[in-house]
Every structure is written in C-alpha cells, then in structure tokens.
Picture 1 (cartoon, rainbow, N blue to C red):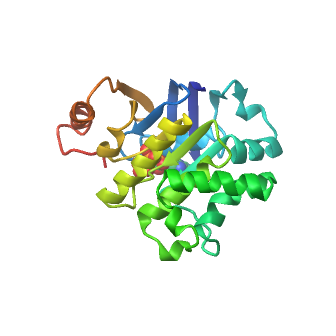
Picture 2 (spheres, protein in one colour):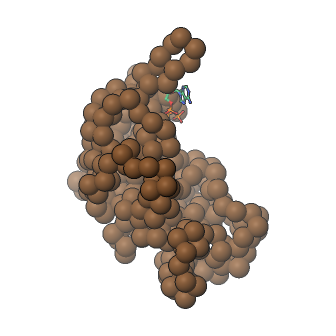
Length: 252
Ligand SMILES: Nc1ncnc2c1ncn2[C@@H]1O[C@H](COP(=O)(O)OP(=O)(O)OP(=O)(O)O)[C@@H](O)[C@H]1O
C-alpha cells in the first residue's frame, strides 16, 4: 500500500548540507496501524512530510498504492492530499468558525460532493468515534480529545488510502490520548483504515501492529506486535531504553 524505497533527504542551510534521511526503506500494508518513534531530530516529521510530498527529497521513491507522488503535478498532488491522504496534526487544525459536523465535512466540500452523501458519512464517523452529541458545537466548546477525534473523523471523510498522523496525542492527557488511539483502532477495525503515526508516546505506540524506530535518519529497528499489548509495550520500552543510553522510558 505504502512503499518507501531508499529515501534520502537533505536540508541546506548556508553552505552546510544536513543529511536528515539516509536510505530509509519500509512498507505498510492496507489496514495496518504503524507508529514511528525515535529521538528528537531523528527525522520522523521529515519522513512524514516527504511521504505527503510537502517537501521534496533528494533520492528514493514513495509509492502510494502504486502511485509515485513525486511524479504528479501540483494540482494532482493537491487532489491526492485531499482524497487519498488523511492528515491528523498535534494541534488539531480545526476551523474555529465551523461546528464539529462542518469541520468533518470539509474534505467532501473540497471534493465537491453532494450534501446527502456527506451528511451520512459524517454522521457515521461521529457515531463511530462517540462524538455525535457534540456535532453542533464549535472547537472552542469541546475538549482536546474531542477535537482530535473530530480531526480523525475529518481525515477519514474521503476514505483515504492512508492517514498520516503527526504526534496526534502530543497535546493530550492520558485519558484523552486513549480515546484518540481508540478512534484510530475503531477506524482500523470497522473501515480497514491504514494509519502511519509519528509519536513520542510508547503507550500509544503499543496499540499499533508495528513500530518503526528511527535513529539519526535511518530505520534503527522495526518491532512487530505479535501478541499481548502490554508485552509489546515492555519490548518497546526496552528498545527505547537502549536507544536513550539506558535512561528513562519514552523518547524525548
Ligand atoms: N526546514 C528545515 N531546515 C533545516 N533543517 C531542518 C528543517 N526541518 C527539520 N530540520 C532538521 O532536520 C532534523 C530532523 O528534523 P525532524 O523534525 O524531522 O525530526 P523529528 O524526529 O520529527 O524530531 P521531533 O521528535 O523533535 O519532532 C533536525 O535536526 C532538524 O533540526
């Protein structure tokens, strides 16, 4: 579904070139929930931005369901971003002047779909994420967890091939984080959604099928959850501890 092959990304600043992604390769299958973890500066957000073509890269390939996004013109990329990709950001990025229901509908409005289909889909997603009761509230009137579940619903409106989530629980307490991870899991279970999530939170990552651990712009390790979530969390914390030089739990 998503294939990243030998990806290289540099940033230039003055005369200096910083190699940020160095030969990153991995694959994500349809219906997987995959996390990316790694120390600050290891290149997680850069990777996400390369996948969505928000930034260009030096070398390598990003294939989304057989499509090479870098080969598309701006107009086609914009359409892919609205219709084939769903985005969830740390700071929600909801439109303050629109209600929860209206925010969720935005991708379909951009796509130009009729109201009836839009309403049905939005209502289903709001019910799936248990936020139907706040449909007519504005972002300023709801909690952080409710805002993020609204953002996840919005990301799913056009049945995207892939959801890209950058620190979706970064601004939330543990209860709200659990509800948001619950929304991704419900999307996976009921809609066969595929999610690629950057996170510093090993508790959230332990719900994923797989965790890609980055270090210095490379894939340091890939961990696959084979059974119990708590055992996976222990395994994850063990790897993070080694990566942190034996200190602490989560990567900061
Ligand atoms: N626009 C930019 N120009 C120059 N350097 C950049 C730019 N964006 C990121 N970097 C550098 O690239 C490296 C990787 O940054 P990136 O944001 O991808 O890391 P990250 O793993 O997501 O970090 P964090 O966990 O702190 O968000 C860092 O050293 C950062 O300073």
